[in-house]
Image (tube, rainbow over all chains, first blue to last red; front, side):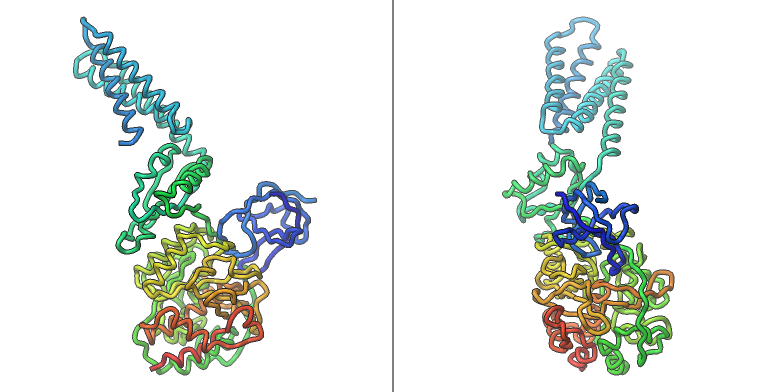
Length: 71
Length: 489
C-alpha cells in the first residue's frame, strides 16, 4: 500500500520516529526510518505493508517499510 | 512412517539389491537389477514431483541415495567385494545433501506460526502439510498438560522459511477439522526511552532520598497510605510479576524485595524501571519510594516476555504469563501491547489461564491517543486497562482512552522516576509507567486479603478511585489510601 505523509518524532515511551499520513493515520515502521530521513516534518511517500506485529511503542499501525523517499 | 522415511527405506533396499547382484562373480539376475533401478527412479520421482518444495526435495533425494549407497557399500564389504565406489559415492551424496540443507537454512529467513489444534487432535494430523514445506514444530507450552488447560496444551510453534509460511498459514486455516486457531507468532518490540525531568514534590513521609521527586506518590495519596501501612501487618506478601525485559535483581533498591525468578537480569532497562514503580523497597533510606513500605507487602518477580532489543513474540509473552502464573504470581503487570482490535487468541487464552487461577492481569492502555479497544492485550476481557494521567491529573496527551472497556483505571504516567540497571534512577513517561503503579497497589491490597478475586480487587480500585475531569476518557485515578482502608483488618 502506498501512502504520503510527514515524518514525526514522538517523545514519549522512549522516543521514536513515525509517519503521520495525509489521511491522519499513524504508521509506526517496526524496523525504523532511515537516519537520513529522520527529520521532523519531512514530507515523504512510502510503500508500506501493515503487520500484526505488536510493539512496545503502542502508537498507530505497525508497518513494514518496503520503500520510502522524500517528496 | 513419513514420506522421507519411506523413500529412504526404498533407496536402501534398491542399493542393497544392486550391490548384492554386483558382488556375484557369475549368475547375475538382470530382473533384480532392473527392479532396483525402477525403485530408484520411483524414489527420485517421489521427491522431485511430490508435495515437497524443490529446494527441500533435492537435498532429501541426495540424502536417500547417499544412505542407499552406504548401505550397499557395507554389504559389499561384508561380501568381500569391491566397495570403494559405493562408499565414496554415498559419502559424497550425503555431503552434498548436508551442504544443500545448510545453505538453505543460512540463506532463508524464517517465520513462525502458532497453531492451536482441537482438543482431540494430534500434530500428526497436519504433518503432511508440515513435511511438504519443510516446517519444524515443537509444543509451544510443554509444561502445560491437557488436563491443566485444554487450549494452551494444544498450541504448537511452527518454524519454516519465510517464503513458504504464507502457504502453511493458508493450509492450516483451511483445515477446520484439526485446527482451532492459527496466527503469526508476532514480534512485540520495545523502544528505547528518553529520560525526562522528574517533577519535584515535597511532603513524602518515607526516608528515601529521592521520594521528594516523585510527584505521582502525592497524586495517589501514597503519603497517607504510608501512615496506614507503617503499623499494619499483611497476611502474606503478594507477588507482582513484571513481564518485560527482565529486572536488574541486584539494584540497590530492588534486591531486598526481588524473588528468585528467570528474568533476574534486565536485557534493556525497561523492566527494571517498571519493577521499581511497582515495589521498590520503601523507607529503607535508599533511592525511591513505592507503596511497598519497608518491603513488607510485595515481592517482585521478573520474566523475559521481551528480549534485549525490546521485542518478543506472542509465544514469548504467553510463555512469560504461564511461567509467572505457575510460579505463584498474584498479579501480572504487562507494560506492553499493540494495535490489534481482535487480540491474538494465544494471548486471550493465556489471560484466561491466569484469570481462572484468580491472578490479576493488568495491562497498559497504549500510547496512540486512541481508544484502547484497538489495542491488545489491553482490550481482552478481564484485564485491568491502565491509562496515564499527568501531574494535573489530566489524560496524558499520548495515552489511549480506556472507558470503552470493562475494567478501566488511570494512574500517573508522565515524568515517573524509578530504578534503572546499574544502581541508577531516571524518569520516563508512558502508559508503561502507569501500569506497574496500579499493579503495586493491587499487590498491597492482596497482601491483606489474598482471597479477593480479580473483579473484587478491581471494584475496590474503581469505588475508591478519584473522579477527575478526564474520568470519562481514562477512568478513575487510583487512590492508594482509600483503597487500602477497604482491606485493612
